[in-house]
Amino acid sequence: MRLDYLKTFLTVLETGGFLAAAKKLGVSQATVTNHVAILENFFEAKLFDRTVKGAELTEAGKILKVSAEKILGEIEKAKSQISILKGRTVELVRIAASTIPGEHLLPSIIAEFKKEHPMAKFEVRIMDTGNALSCLKNDTVDFAAVGSLIGCENDFEKLELGEEELVLIVPKNHGLGKKQTVKLNEILKYPYINREEASGTRKETERILLEAKIPPQKLNVVLELGSTQAVITAVSEGKGISIISSIAARKAEKSGLIKTVKISNAKTIRKLYLLRQKKELNKTCEFFWKFCQKMETSFSQIRDNF
Image 1 (cartoon, one colour):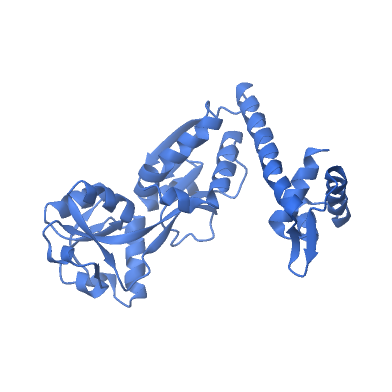
Image 2 (cartoon, helix red, strand yellow; image 1 turned 135 degrees about the vertical axis):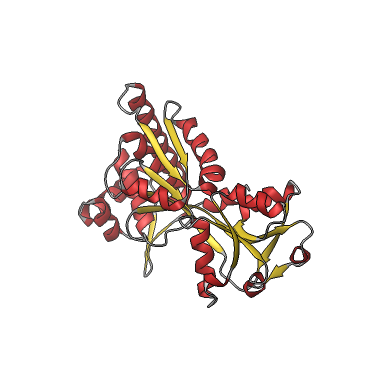
């Protein structure tokens, strides 16, 4: 029994076939077949059924999957902790983050990561999306956590950390606050409070307006502010209405500051991303990236916590 047999087994499962697994691992298909055969002999059970759709797990294979993931996960965890202990990977992890992922997602993700890597150190700088992306392009940070990829869709490697909805917020006693939903063209009638030009929320708002064939210039903008909290404060004081993150809006509504209203005729769901340059990073950063990759498949669970 060798660890690489288990890795091969999980790669066949991940890719759906022996040939695809061989390509990903950089070995021959015969090697993959041999590794799986050794495992089947060891456990005296068939692990895969080959079908027209590819390789599918048998009941025995499903049992091994759970154990193999735990074994390799624990080995990787021990390897990284020993590496940190020996002083080889105490490098700082630098993240530039826009408001929503920076204030509402990253703290819990980093806290979970530090349970496995207690010596890891983080520096998270909160800024607008445009500046976060510039920092990443200029190599002054290792990662950017943002809520919009408009203009840089193919520039970086990316992971999905979560998703949320953009919603309308209005003062507590505003007429629109009595509605369950509003249409985008109704928003044009009222004073509007906008985020700054480089904001991801603003870029996503302009996207949904353009998709609805409404030029963003038609918004009756009376203020332009540099943070989500500043927008919430201005709306709560009756200075206008705005479209912001549902995560931030929900917290403000619970505090009795504003009312939130869903937008009915637009694609208001947006994803929250972690981005990196397409190059190798220091070991602590690579461990953090792998940790977030594991979370990517269950990012909806993170979203549901808010």
